[in-house]
Image (cartoon, rainbow, N blue to C red; front, side):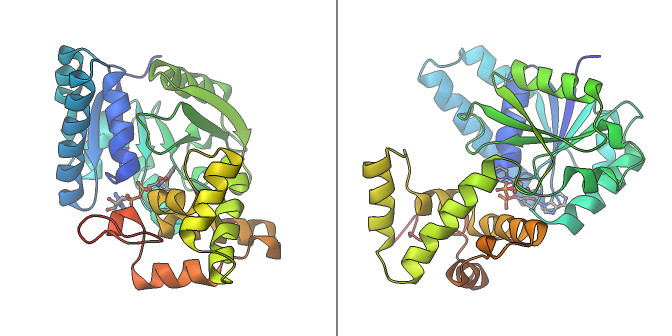
Length: 286
Ligand code: NAD
C-alpha cells in the first residue's frame, strides 16, 4: 500500500521542510503544532521557498503552486486520523515524543505508520508507547530538508520489513537516499557529528581559539562546507544539548559529556539562528 496522506507533527524548521518535500512528492499534507503561530510561519516559509525554487527554474511554477495547495494546517492531533503516515518532528524530548506517539496510536487507522524525525532518541522506546511497534520507525531527515539528500532510516527492535519498505519508498519518491541503521543512541549521523561539534565548543570554552577561527580551520583545513559552530547554530543549540545528553546517558561514557558552555548558552536562551543568537548573532545587529 502506497503512502498518499502524511501528517507532520511539529511545524518548526524540520517539520516545515518535511511538509514541503512530502507535498512535492505528491502527498496530501496536514501540518500540526501546539503553537498555531508556528504553523502559519511554516506555511509562509514553504510558500516563499517554493516560489524561489520556481523563480530559479528548479521546479515548474505549476509544481510549486500544486505542492503548496496540498499542505493544510492540521489543527488538533485528532485530524491525523486519516493519515497513511505521521512524521513527528516535535522538540527533541522523550516525554514530549512519547505523549505524541501514545496519542497518535489511539487516533490513527490501524495500518498507519508512525515515524519520528528524532536526532538521537530511542525509536524502540517510542514504539513501546504504542500498540503497533512493528509500524514505528525513525525517519531522520537532515537540515535543511529540501536540500539534503539523506534520510537516515532507524529500525527499532520490532520495526517490520513492510514498514521499512513503505517509508524508504516514500523517501525515494521525495528524491532522497534512505540509508538503514540500527537503533542506538545518536544512530550514526549524530554519534559522529555531535561529539565533533561538542569538541569545537570545548576549544572555544577553553580559550584555545575564537569561534571564527575554529570554524575557519574546519572549513579551510578540512574542506567542511560549514564550520561546526555555525552548524550548531543552524541545528539549534537546545537540540545539540539534547543529543549530547542522549549520547552521555545512553552509553554512560564521559567522552560524551556536554560542554558547560553549550549548557550555559541554552540556559541563556541563545539557541542559535532560531533565537537570533548562538555562537554568532543573526538578523539585526549581526
Ligand atoms: P524546532 O524547535 O524548530 O521545532 C519544534 C516544534 O515542535 C516547535 O514548533 C514546537 O512548538 C513543536 N512542538 C513541541 N511540542 C509539541 C507537541 N506536543 N505537539 C506538536 N508540536 C510540538 O525544532 P527542529 O529543529 O524542527 O527539531 C524537531 C525535531 O527534529 C527534533 O526531534 C530534532 O532533534 C530533529 N532534528 C533536528 C535537526 C536540526 O538540524 N535542527 C535535524 C534533524 C532532526
